[in-house]
Amino acid sequence: MLRPAPAPGRDAGRALDAGSFAGGAVTSAVPLARDLALVALAKAAVSALVLALGFRAVSDDDFARVVLAQAWAHAPRLDPTGTSWLPVPFWLNGALFRVFAPTLEVARAVAFALGVASAALIYISARWITGDRRAALAGALLAGAFPWSACLGVATVPELPTAALTLFAVASLVTPPAGPAPPAGRALLGALALALATLSRYEPWPVAAVFAAMALLAAARLGQGRAAQATLALAALAALAGPAAWIAWNRVAHGEALHFLARVASYRSALGPGSDGSLLRLFAYPAAMVREEPELFLSPIALALVAWRARRGAARPFPPLLRAARPYALPGAVAALQIAALSLALVRDGAPTHHPERATLLALLLLALAVGDLLARAFRGASSGARRALGGALLAVLCVGLFFRPHLRREHFNPRTDEVAIGRAAAELTPPSAPLLIEVVDYGHLATLAALGRPWGAHPDRSIDPRDPPVRSSFDDPASLARRAAGLGAAYLIGRVRPPVLDLAGPPLATRGAFGLWAAPSAAGAPEDRARRPAPPADPAPEVAP
Image 1 (tube, rainbow, N blue to C red):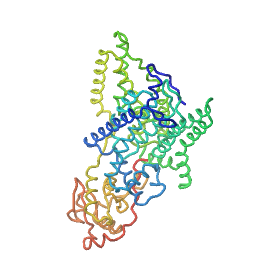
Image 2 (cartoon, one colour):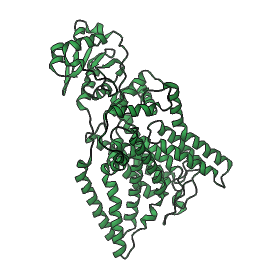
Image 3 (cartoon, one colour):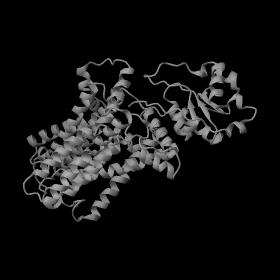
Image 4 (cartoon, rainbow, N blue to C red):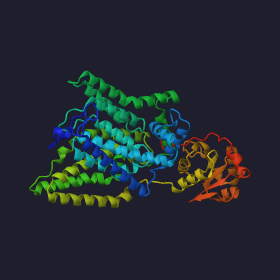
């Protein structure tokens, strides 16, 4: 397994105080439980703060995923979307929708809980990597609080749980400094986590290949018992099970094993040629990391400068932080290989279409763990003067980040407040079986569908998928709207409050911001009869960004 060089000041007892978590008895269970509780509470507090500040969604993908999970809860099937999106997040959310209710509130509660669970996985991973309780705790707290981790901890997208599962898998193969090689059972746990991750997002796929190779190399090492070798070989197979299963499913369902790649590439191509050349695309992911989380990159620089000055002028030497950083070298190399693979995919139009920093979350989490670890060691072992200098340097880093961050961000978040509000109003004011016709201005209609909670009974007015021919909205003139509503048997309309809709349907039943809810004019004479009609099959929710 991975064997980083031992760092000074870490003994085998400390390396094992977290317990093995697999294949052996857990020691120091009380401190472990206390630390996990602290990390979970801290993550919950950060998530609550993010929500209090008004954050609700990264992009329209957040709402699209909720809509598709609601549709799966209504009519489950093996492949929830039939698109390039992987199935595990929809299985999980859809199953919980069936237990509770298919609402946006439940989806957000699930996201909150998954964010807290991800923080616990990150802490366990840090313990496995460092073998040091306090260093792992400091790193995990920082990893749960930097802005992208904070936002993704409450967003209804699977990036943070996927990155936490991937980090857990990589850490399961790491031998901590001064500690014995991890038990083979831990690698099997990591492989199962990686199987879930690879069926949630595509970013872990390169990691799965590296993990399988590392597990097989560990199995071939001299001194391994046959049981351990078999477990490691099984771990290698389990790590590749997710990609293999998805490729096989695409071959059976679509006639092409790599259908999902072709779909993603066709979407990016339909969006039009980007302005960035191949070289800029190649470095787009590293640039996004620095642009979105500058404090994580400036903090090690500040720490190095303070350490250099302290070693030159202080009587008491600064802690040997370079050696303490060595345990992160090999996990960091795995993350670097992942980013290299993503960069090559971006050059070939096979990567996510927006917010590229989401895909680099594994590397950002590792960097946060390392920064938190090293800062904790520095404050613990440095002189009082060096501590003051380090505190001043970190304060300067935060000030620089706060000043430049608004100017560095290229894409912003969109909570779709009005669209969500009109969807909730429609859920309250319309019968559950009443079909609705929804105006499609942009992908904000997905927020309305998610808040409505019954996408199978709602009909988007048109498709705006760039791969489809452009279609004019029927909400642009009364006659087209009347024909479209009658053809679908729609009992209610949701759209912007504009003259064409007002001329046809009169005053709205409710308004929320720029949007309104109307009874369809053809249903005005007997709305209860129209509400009893069975809703025709819903148009599938478009794939916003494969």
